[in-house]
Image (tube, rainbow, N blue to C red; front, side):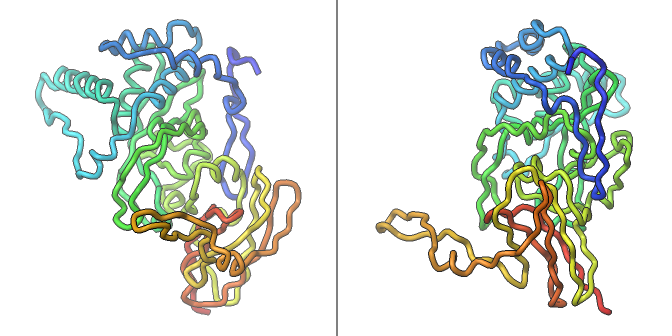
Length: 360
């Protein structure tokens, strides 16, 4: 495909409303990605923008260079979040000097980010937009709602994240440099963030709204494109446990994450998954397959994670039908107290649904 031609979306209709591909999914950016590894910040943000993009004539490569440089060089500032801090922006509304005050604040803010090489989502998105502005690539910051937890299914959440949109040719596409940069390891007991692990996720590079709205939803309707997805639909989305699932799960039924059923109902599940699935399981609040791994003490101070042979024998598997990339199976509701179902692919949690068992 010629990247210099006007590019069109190829939408494929899903009964679940999950995804739309973009022509950029198959483009090779290896030359750009390799080049940005050599670019260093030298205390001048305009020079950084020039160094990253001057050799690339088209907007798509300029955008890629900026995006990859940020994800390569800026770490998520989890300590800032753990301390409960918030970004302190100048409160100058009504002041004639407010525009210049805000410009100075932003420039100082971005200098601190580039010096420390740390940011939260506002900083990632603001840096991306600033570098694009310098290069005359049209980009915007989008504050909104980001889904990260299973318990959020069916529940409202507040504004908690910021990402970007960029205009390529005549189409707005979505990207999230924060989530593309890597993962945060959390303390399982307290939920506190412990460590940032840099691991690039291309899923959050130039995505369609349909695909992005699995776990992102904008604050303003301006960024909700056709086919429209309501905020309520977004809050009712299933929970997806990993990037691997998001990348490979291209269709699913039921599409909503909130299942209203009656005792005795048979729920039909159908997935299109591009990776081969050998074993399929279901966990719930009624029954969970035991973990295949356990921790043993090897000395007074050392432990070792080993395979639990007892747990392996206790695994329960779900029979399924496979046709091409489609997987289909049923689950019969047998308990009024059922409130979630977790689909597991090859011992890895994949998708969770919230269940509401209604009285007959």
